[in-house]
Length: 291
Image (cartoon, rainbow, N blue to C red; front, top):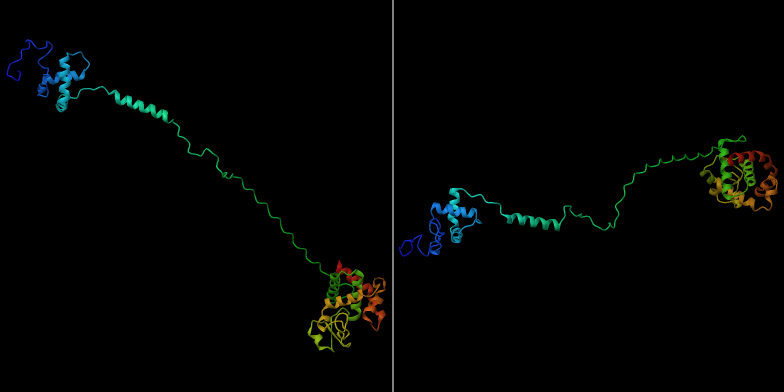
C-alpha cells in the first residue's frame, strides 16, 4: 500500500520484476518500519552472504535496513542466535604488521648495558695469598765472657784490674801501657781502692781499705795535694787510671823503658825497683781480661 491509500500491484507497471514481498521498500520514509520475521530472515541471509548475487534493489534495501536498525538487529540476533562470523582479517593483518615492525626495530637478544670502552680503573686481580715466611729466630745475644781471677788475685782485685784495662782501651793505649798500669797498682795498693785516714772526705766514696800515707788515695795512691785531681776524682778507678796513663804517655820513649823505670818516672816512689816484681803477674791479668 502506498501513502495515498492505493494498493501496489506487484505485476503492474513501474514495478521491478525482481521485487519480492519480503523485501522492504526503498522509500526512505519507510526504511525503518517494523519488519516481519520473514523480512529479518531475508536480511540475515543477506548479511551472511553479502557477496551472493542479489538483485540490485534487494541489496540496497538490506544495506539500508541494517544501517538504520542496528538496535533491532541486535535484538534479533539474541532471539535467533548470533550468526557465525569469520574472523576479521583486519586485526590479524594489523598484528602481523606490528610484529614485522617490532622484529625490524629490535632483535630477540637484549643489548648489553655494559660500557663499550674499558674501565679507567682496572679491576683488581685476585692473587693467592703467599704464605708468610717464618720469622727467623732472633739469635740470643752473646753473654759477656766472665773474667775469672788469675795470678792469685781475689774477685775484688780482679774487678779493679778490669776497670784499669777497660779505661786504657778507651784511651787507645797499647798493651804495654796496660801491663805497666796494672803492675803499678799492684805495688801501690794491691789492687784495692784505698781511702785515706788523713782525708775523712775520701771515706765518703766507695773504697775497700783505708791507708795512712799522708793524703794518698785510690788505686795509684795519688795525692790531691800534688795536683792529680780532687778527692772525689781520685777515688774513681776510671779517672785515676786515665790520669796515670796520660802522665805515662808524656814520658819520651816510655815504650822502650823497663817496666820499673817507666812506672817510677810517673810515680816518683821511694822504692823505684819494687814495680818490676809484678810484671809477669800483670801480664797474666791483662791477657785474661782481653781474652
